[in-house]
Length: 243
Ligand code: ADP
Ligand code: MG
Image (cartoon, rainbow, N blue to C red; front, top):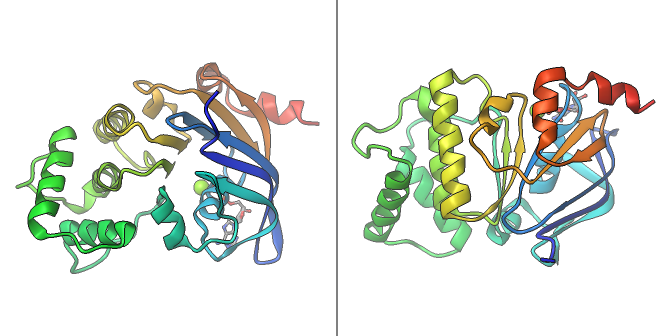
């Protein structure tokens, strides 16, 4: 069996003195796709932020190992360099900065070296071709999510945490995002932790493991079949089983 890429052990996370996550355990192997579901306010985003090292989310107990290294106390930029990626539920707009210069900066930060404009264009073109994106049309505000997927392909992380990348999208956009994630699975072979409400995004994707988080605890671990069950019957059954 392959070594774990991510090993979360008894993780306790506080936000402003309130314990939000209680003793979370999670193992992800290289290349695996995990889905994290659960009701609103369960702590799903909190887990994403804590894994990425957002300083607002304080680790009070337990540990996070990633790619053979204890990253529990590592700063965000070091985690990004180690191969972690977190997409944002509500991506920030950076006024006055074009997507390509944003991507170039992100890549340079990740690699810790300057990238020649020529080389960057080449990589950008290659990723856009994989996503069947048109370099000339650029990105309107409504296409921020696509930009995120492009960033995912370019940064090529070992583990990408996608926090509701599908929220607020129309049917066509969900398809494009889903196709983009599939392209990442097939062409980059990175692992994924997909946090989602909308099981539509998973229809075309290969899923290895599923987890349900409720009230700051993982209350169910299962295989891909749980996606269908939750999309048919919701979480209620699992919430009751907990008592
Ligand atoms: P989910 O993503 O599953 O909907 P969240 O992780 O966003 O859940 O929230 C879990 C709990 O943590 C909620 O009770 C929320 O109010 C609290 N919380 C999360 N982030 C913050 C924050 N930045 N400031 C204050 N409370 C927060
Ligand atoms: Mg959330």
